[in-house]
Amino acid sequence: MNIRHIRQTWILCFHLALSITLGESGFAQVVGEIGEMDRLEQQADDAIANEDPEGAALSIGKAALMAALIGRKEETPHARLLYQAAETLFRGQEQGYRAIALFERAGGQPPASKGVCQFLSHAAEMVKESGKDLKALEDFNMESLKERGQRHIAKSKEWGDLLQGLQQDLSC
Image 1 (cartoon, rainbow, N blue to C red):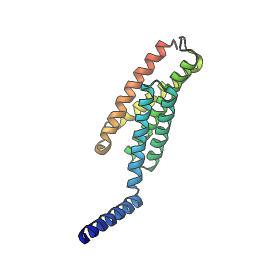
Image 2: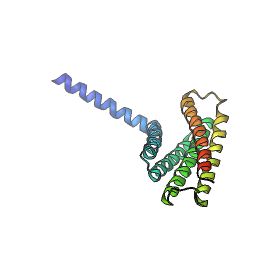
Image 3: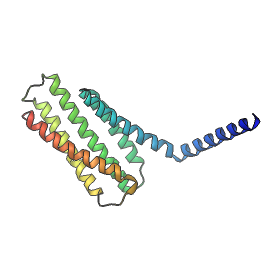
Image 4: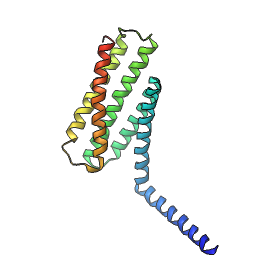
């Protein structure tokens, strides 16, 4: 019983010391912020899958805020550019989701209103800008962020095609 109590005390002390060290270094917070950004991005995907474009716009808008926050804290220029490009991509998605919501509120019949078409056009510009920034990062060896960069590149291509199709389908 006594050894068990000592072991539990050591584990508690180690956990407390680790928490304090990680908290002071900022590592725990950054991991938390990246995790929150990813969670919000997934929440937006889930919302649109459940036919809730307004909820998707809200979630991806929050993810864009998280990307901006993370980007400002990054010390390396490549990582900073990656998160800035992610913010731009998320803002483009937000505009696209808002266009869909507005279209649905207006009755959901083409041709779309001028407001919907402007949202789609603005979204396409942002996604294209994000794609260019992400493409510029492909040449740099950023092993720790490579998977995230590739995921955002694929998403920017997917969204570019999606927005172009929406503009055609909605007669913009």
